[in-house]
Length: 178
Image (cartoon, rainbow, N blue to C red):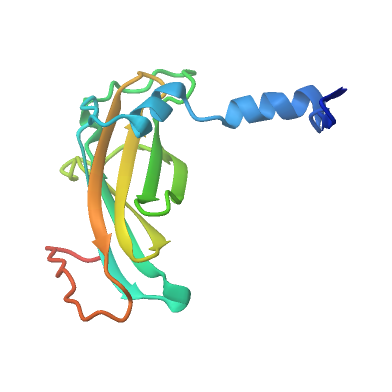
């Protein structure tokens, strides 16, 4: 399509890949409930969830390594029924935003729940690393059960100091190691 108005010409090219590419794009698009939870200022409580950002060493080119640790409790999710789409899986979305630039770092992943052995801890852990420039950041985490619709979200604010600044790290204490 081409149109001209006031000396300006606008051209619109047809989408490449046709209907098949459009169907794949729709299939891979995040659930609208997840998008709303990522954009919301309020935390959702359908799935118990907690997250923290650990700021580690500076990297080349002015970035700093940040580890986002997420824990969630899937015990309140109904057991999967056979043949249900998304049964036994949770969708995890992590978005870290740099306040000063608006740059977003995003991870989306499907997590299999599997059967936990008797006596195993109910809470599950996931960790993702990102490279952030110095400044204030915020991480937003959403866990969604596509089969049942349950959703949990949490946000965590953190600060990345300049790479050349003196700083102390946060000790991590645990009762076991992998």
